[in-house]
Image (cartoon, rainbow, N blue to C red; front, top):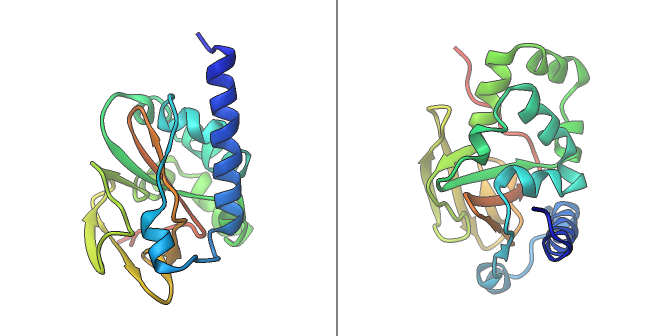
Length: 177
């Protein structure tokens, strides 16, 4: 049951995620970023994405790919969530091609998901395996802050009942062979 208390928490998380999405490119001081506490959200990864207006494109694509149920299951996943602005950087023809092929769309979306817990603020640079099968390079550098591949990650994560969501400022694209 979606209670008023849970709704209030969802609104708080949505506001925080939206603020994070708007400021993902502005890296705070290294110490501040590394000390930022995660926000707790009582729903799933999908619930948190739905509650965040800046993730509406990602949410629509997850539903279109048939991945919403998988991302709502119990477990521990890390999702690097590109904002609507990140998707807007992709040329419309390319985005249409990705969205028009479920296999390609699934590969792109699962490239944003890491099994287990990953925190890009903790390591200098390291490779992490994705559900798609390829690896991401995550890490933290004093000049650029937290990053995933070439994308800037916000310093504040959202912990959900089945994992962690990090807002990023660009869409990650796997290598296609």
